[in-house]
Amino acid sequence: MNMKAIMVMFDSLNRHMLPPYGCDWVHAPNFQRLAKQTVTFDTSYVCSMPCMPARRDMHTCRPGFLHRSWGPLEPFDDSVPKMLKNAGIYTHLVTDHYHYFEEGGSNYHTKFNTWEFFRGQEGDPWMGQVKEPDLPDPITGRHEDTYPFVQQDFRNRGGMPTEDLHMQTKTFEAGVDFINRNEDADNWFLQIETFDPHEPYFSYKKYKDLYPEHYDSYKGPHFDWPHYNFVENTRDEINHLVHENAALISMCDEKLGTVLDLMDKQNLWKDTMLIVCTDHGFLLGEHDRTGKCWCPFYEEIARTPLFIWDPRQRLQDERRQALVQPAIDLGPTLLSYFGLSPTPDMLGKDLGPVLTNNTPVRDYAIFGMHGHHVNITDGRYVYMRGPEEGKNQPLYEYTLMPNHMRDSFSVEELQNSEGLVEPFPFHKGLRTQKIPAKGGLPGKEQPPMQLDTLLFDLENDPKQLNPLQDSALEDTFKKEMRNLMKACAAPTEQFERLGLGTLS
Image 1 (spheres, rainbow, N blue to C red):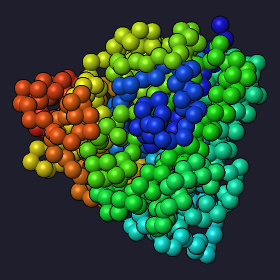
Image 2: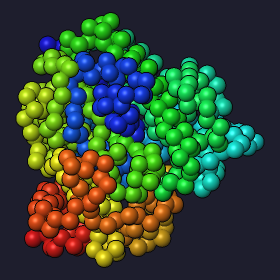
Image 3: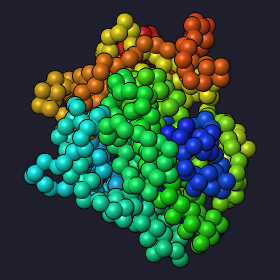
Image 4: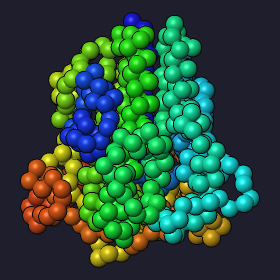
């Protein structure tokens, strides 16, 4: 049997904005079409947050947030694309996700045989223009605290006056071109990855015209790039932000349709695995917040859409409720599909049993961001464990690649390093630096993190409005959290920081 696989990955794609997950107003017919052709997962959770930590998990198939924040792949990290490449499976990445090409993501794409990159998303330093760009007037949202970043974004928008010049369009066109050029080839994996519908929500009039009732009546300021903060805008402005997100999702939906059309035209369904996923969701005013990186990881952020077609099983228009974590599970699933085995350090699970008959592959999932809550869920309850007494210490970064999102660790940070320390079991004998950390996203201004310990019953409180007070249930989740942290070889101080006792 020929073996091919395509993964279409979006960034910050909200499941609650998609028709297959119950949304009845966002125009996304191709996502609905996708659900008819695949298995839809209802209990899919993030692992490490946000963008590049999630991608590190996808390469290594293990949670990384307990040891390190944002950064490149480490020398000791396993990489699924590299393993496929080494086994003779041709791997190709097409993307407009510019974080791959900053210091904090600088070596992920090199694990593929080949890659293509299309520039211009967000504040990507792409369009060189000394003169300040014209900004909409009035404008609200992100520009108030990141004005130079917003300026660059509008310089970039100026280079894409029509949809054919947009980086998402180019990304999907490149993916389609790869499939067409390799129609008769065997043993390849293609990752089509777009930064959209990540904010800012830049789309074109044809997609806004899908929502005429809103756009014909809205008279407020330009608003397509929210703060990561408590809501400071009017209800009408937040409603506009939601529609800007919807318009961009509709654009994503149309591009997804080009892949589905090609699957139909070439009958790739017979021999090609198709995975459609995202890294995380986004708050669009729910819980009186916008953003994803600093507040508790509510369901809007942590519970994600996931669709899989496996040509060996040929299951379509079915749903699965078993608990899965695509960031760490898709790697073992792809390796198994191509006849390979995960490494001993990989903690993700092959999703084959879930696809076949909803057989669970885990009882609990652990997720979070370095220095934030450590979260655990069984799919029914979510337990968010914050640090003791509000102090977020002790906390360290363990790394041989000391890079933040856009720059290296500062001289001061490195001067405070405790030097090379004994390796963790998955470090393959390599010592790493141990560097004091504050938590959150280094170099990113944000409000104080809301780190109170919380427990929610998702069955009876799906919107997470009423935290439970149940000491017996909390004790159960504390025990399971400790077990999962031990399985991840979490640093001793993480147990101390969270008031979970000692590692032993």
